[in-house]
Image 1 (cartoon, rainbow, N blue to C red):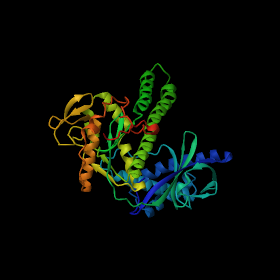
Image 2: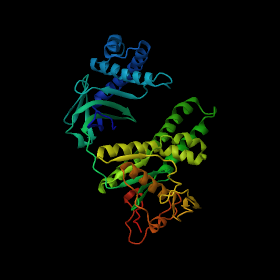
Image 3: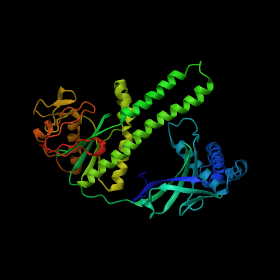
Image 4: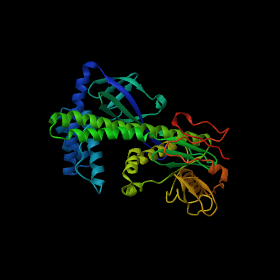
Length: 412
């Protein structure tokens, strides 16, 4: 996460761990007791408004030790986590039901709650876990609190670390990012990259989940099948769809930021926080694809990678970026499938190319610069792209970008 004090970034290192065979069941029992104790603590803190450590300690410590048999350190971490959850819920003006922890997860304080020693992790209470593998890039930075999670039969330890925030360089230009459900278009007045999205793969698993829900909702099937077996499978399909888009968003944001760093460019993206309000007006297929894409997910990872890499980032107004001429500012008219033409200056281009040029111009205006007027050959060499059809490259232009499926087109 990109949170942290000024001059610092907070990163989370994921560590695959495995308990000793004879201690696995005992550790799972502890995590179940911790979950029950956490839910009890949340309700008690909200009911009594014991939002300080002192009040929560007096109210809960003995109960957590006696009723749930938690080790002393686990009891302290339990009500500390409960305070954080209760505060967040109480501050939300649109809060719903009291939050409830469902997953097996334990919050661990550094040194007191856990220690990393060589290839082992020691937890308070005498539990030991073997380290299977983790990202060693942040070994030199001090560890903070951690969270042990049990999911899909595997234990994972997430360790928080503070790293210095890199200084941002002075950009030589802008790399604009335009988001739609089938392609991410990245470029400026000199270069363009098209990266395909895996939204169809994600939609495939979402449709499988919907079919199962529709088929087994009938009362002719046993309650166990409807409530346990099918529900587990439906959750698996939805999780698979989310994992596909999450993995793609992380890799794509890294690719975009790497391109920006190579050219010492700033990155500009549209502010799409209000897009959800207009989704109701879109056709169902288009709306479903945008929901599956998770455009805010890509924006989050772009912002984070830019912070981590010291790349300047600009967020611009998305209004009319795909319908205004980047050369003269006139309203564009349809000239074919996803193709627009300016009735005033004659510029003709794919709507995504138009959006990229307008985003670049708006970012440059924030920087105090101006857009280099695009030449007609550069713009009109972009063939209409029908949701994944290959874009024709001019002879001698660079080859497609790696495995991402992007196309780079040089200026004419």
